[in-house]
Every structure is written in structure tokens, then in C-alpha cells.
Length: 259
View 1 (cartoon, helix red, strand yellow):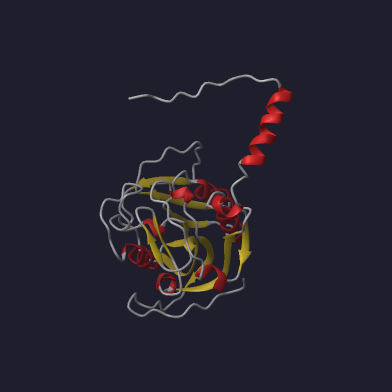
View 2 (cartoon, one colour):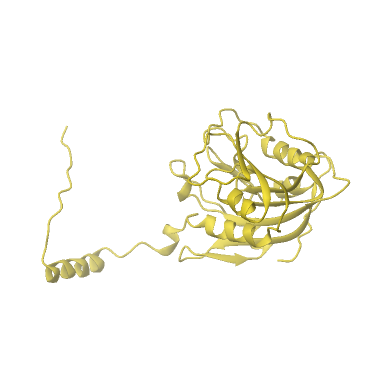
């Protein structure tokens, strides 16, 4: 079988520039929409979560901490932070007020009504979708179970800061869920929305703020080989635990806070 090799060739600058002009003339650049993806989502998420985070002291937990960026922000704000992830993580920093605990969030033991602050940066949408982050078994309601667990361990009146993919309800297997008008109210049902923001990509592949209606009606695009080539909108939420939280069987309508 023949193999193809790409060999770099040095050309004079005048010839290289001429070749580029010829290429652009015969092979026009791809349209902006073909390049739209989710790259840069963490810029939107981290800035929202940081802007809504109060100052400590207090107890905080981050579910799905990954590299621990938001855990470090919380520690710098004066919280003692329990950073949890399903996979082993090696932080590039060390802080005396951050403790890492590896394991399945739904199987670990946490005290009830204990945490003043919970952080969930685009993590809940992966729970129960097998194929990524060490998740091996599909669970239709895994994400709802995580939210119910969070409401159990957060203090009455405590704060949950979270982000999640939004759009028309869908599962982009094996990557994540996308939350629309059907599932998002179920996800947030045990909390009061104090602030919400919604973002989507424009044709230049830039994140721009949009209305809730635009975000929840966004038609996501699925790429089975690369999660970063998928496309969806984003929802960012500051949620307060209500003292008499609803049970998971009693969904309520979305009541957005200031947007």
C-alpha cells in the first residue's frame, strides 16, 4: 500500500505570497458557520462563576473539578474547598484550603446541609452518558440524581453556581446532554434562580450573550469523534437552595432571575 508523506519545502517569500493568492482565488475559505464549535466555552463559564462567587469563609464543594481552577478561585475567596472528580487529577498548584477527593459523587459520603457553596462547571451533563471521563454505564437520570444530591448537601439558603450546555433537548453521545425547555426545568427544580445568563456562538465563532429563548431553541451540532467540534449554547446559573426543596418528581417551570 502506498503511503503519503508531507515534506516541508522552503520558498522565497515573493513566491509563497503569490501561491497563497492563487490558492485563495481557486479555493475560497470555508464559510464561518462551518468553523463554529464550542472552543472558548471556559472563558464564558469561568468568568460568570467567578463574578457570582461570594467571599468566604465557609465550606465549598466542586463537583467535577477537573484541573481545579474554580476550586482555587473559591479557596482564594476564603472558602475551604472539597474538590471532587471521578478521575484522578494532578493540580499544577497546591493550596492549604483545597482537598481533593476522587470518586463517584453519587457514591461518596458527604454531610447533609453542610456546604455554603457548590460549584458545577459543565459537569452534570456528562453523568450517565457512557463513554467519557471514565463513565461506563448509561443512566437516564444520572444528572438529576446529582442535582438532588447537591440539594441534600448544600445548606438551606446555600448557593450553587453552575453552567451547562443548552439548546433543543438532546443527548450528544458519547459526550453530554444538551438542556432545553423539557429537561432544564427538571435539572433546576430544587433551586431558586437568582441570576442566569445565556450564550451562543455567532458566525465568527465568538460567544455572544443571547436570550433564554434563543439558547433553549438552539439546534446543537453533534461530532462523534471530537467533543470540541460539537456546537451548543451555554446556560450560566446562580442558584439558591430553597428551604423546602421540591422533590425530583415535582418539576417546576423556569423562573429566570436577572439576565
